Amino acid sequence: MRRKNKRQIFENVTVVDAGAKGKSVGKAPDGRVIFLSNAVPGDVVDVMTTKKRSAYFEGLATHFHVLSDKRTQPECQHFGVCGGCKWQNMGYEHQLRFKQNEVENNLRRIGHLELPKISPILGSMKQYFYRNKMEFSFSNSRWLTESEINSEKDIDDRKALGFHIPGMWDKILDIKKCHLQQDPSNAIRLETKRFASENGLSFFDPRKQEGLLRTMMIRTASTGEIMVLIQFFEDKKEQRELLLNHLAQEFPEVTSLLYVFNSKQNDTIYDQEVVCFLGRDHIFEEMEGLQFKINAKSFYQTNSEQAHELYKVTRDFAGLTGDELVYDLYTGTGTIAQFISKKAKKVIGVESVPEAIEDAKANARHNNITNVEFFAGDMKNVFNEQFIMQHGQPDVIITDPPRDGMHKNVVEQLLLVAPPKIVYVSCNSATQARDLALMKELYEVTKVQPVDMFPQTHHVENVVLLEKRANL
Image (cartoon, rainbow, N blue to C red; front, side):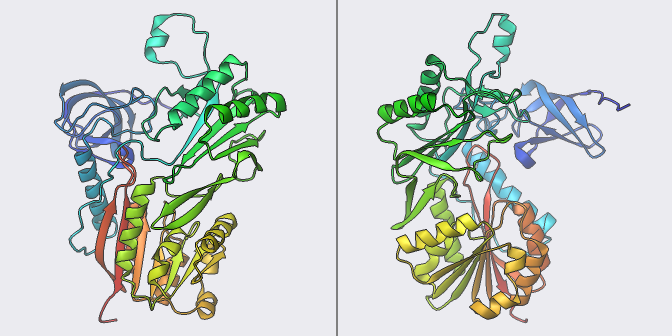
């Protein structure tokens, strides 16, 4: 029989750092690390442990003796329950410092790299309302707050349109106001819930797998264009059109009103047909005069303004003069490839998702860019010696892999190709450091620039310039 963790209490623990996944860090009396989900570095707290491992504890602060001077008042009424913006209670300047430290520590401790002076992190001009895409879930059994549970009142309205409670697939927190996406996002979500409730449209029950309304996605572009997609679990034409016609009337500024009928076990739409109910089936993002067509399934950096800063750093690190052949690995919808194309002789983009490559090609045509080519395929299979022979020896390689980093075969091929420069863009400096360690015999790190794409969270992007060692 499995032994339950015996909870322990540690008193007067000083919180000293911010660690992985947004948790803060203290030390137990025996020297083991304690990861806390509800404290800020500088707090002095009593801790109740919730999990015990050989090298660390996880716990909750149950009493605060001293409140940190790094604290600030959270903007959002849902802070502490929603789980989406875990650092709202920490001043933004302190968030940036901890993100900078994480990047440096990962590169040094995991990569064991010799580093130049790391540039100060680029903070976001917007600390709230910066996301261009949000996804919300409908539920017929919303998450109840502690005060609601303790009130012992009968609660008739259990409908929700909001976010999953962390770690609970079937529990949805009803959101009154989200501080992540600019208006009219909140207005659209609230009106959708109000109208659906008053007109008897059923909200999804994930346990019974029934109900009409399943999810809602809202995209707001830097151009001012708006996309709204409603995912229906049941195919009821009259009710579906009732809601969509109402949204079209209430929010005429919506550029693209879409829906999906999805009766699968999961709510992913990538294998589903998206139907355009009104307007276009896409919206446009814009960056330095380039337009990028975004459809319901497109990937685009979720902080448009900071994506521009990230791409400018990438272009600057590449140091292009107009004569270079550039490979853009993990190109996605080709935004970086097109962004740098004016400064390059030719850009070759490679991506595993065929639909993303089709978007990249369409965007290049739309932008009248003729010096880019895009290819679909698994990177570890496509990016090989034959590919290099066919398309040419690159002068610069830009790589922007997913959170897991690059496959070891891709790293090995990079070392075989051995271009003079590699620009490595990463959303996970730990896997970035692992990959850089495999290349440090041939390359030295000459520039490092962290970029904050996601204020109020622990996530941070990092750009590294690798240059081939002079003696090789």
